[in-house]
Length: 231
Image 1 (cartoon, rainbow, N blue to C red):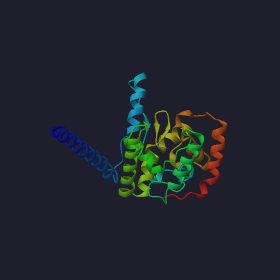
Image 2 (cartoon, one colour):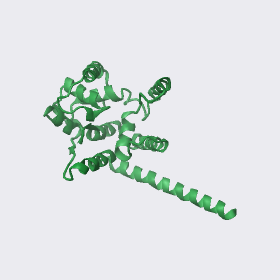
Image 3 (tube, rainbow, N blue to C red):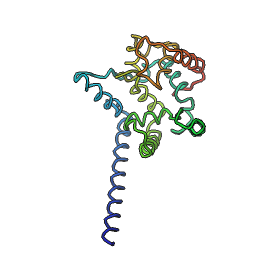
Image 4 (cartoon, helix red, strand yellow):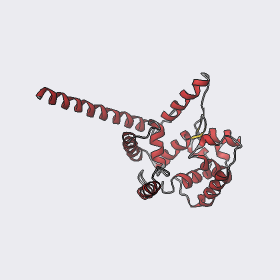
């Protein structure tokens, strides 16, 4: 019995040490990214692996551009569409989380999320799309690290440069070229709002595809953009 208890405690201690090491690994990367740009993300690597199953030579469309070379219209549109309280929360929008929980309970299934831009970035940088309690817990821990180490402007700059905007298309610069054949700096309000409206399901909208939902969502983003505060 004592041997079993000792083995159990040793296993728990090793698991705890492993967990702590993993958290420091995440933190080290975030500290590095305070002034270095991520070359890729967990989501990007996972998608590239899938694309290369059909074509081993396939590559992602992705190119980093500095924050000042991204249209302010796109910045406003993304905040209006994805996280209106980005500048005032500390990584979590608790009111939105409660609203999403209440609606999901009423519907009996998950029909609405409440992830902030920082939470989305945490997931994209390090995690998979798997729905599991441990992944949500890890996402929350990484979110706290991002908000503690990085400025809002840096969080938003990284997000805009790595978020998915089409199948194999990542970041504002690649998205602007892919959908509108122009650099991210040249996006006008209507184009910016359309890109922001695509974000929940970016692979559903190849260039030129239009739907009633996308039209309505674009119009809604356009009507709220001027209220958005950007870093």
